[in-house]
Length: 122
Image 1 (cartoon, rainbow, N blue to C red):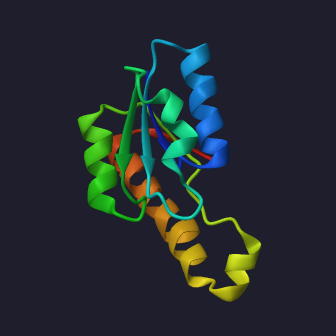
Image 2: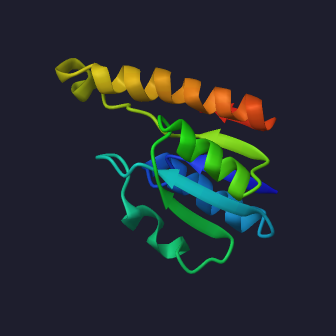
């Protein structure tokens, strides 16, 4: 199975990647992460040598990138961990939360619908 994990360089997403690769070693995992304040490549550095893991720096709000990744990597399912989640930041500036958590998810939903790919929203 080919799985797209969005937000895989974040705390929870990186743990999901490790779980998936250790329990389903024949699956291929593509990690799409924007690498904002919440995403850090150090969280997945130990996976860099795994031939079943592939990292792409990209944004779920970019429809062209999402569609290209789905097609190029023949994705079967998307698991979305990409989100703005720090409450303190939402009070200071709610716009990024709406942009990522609403518009970004809509982009994923539209791309998955067109590609006939299942989406798991976390």
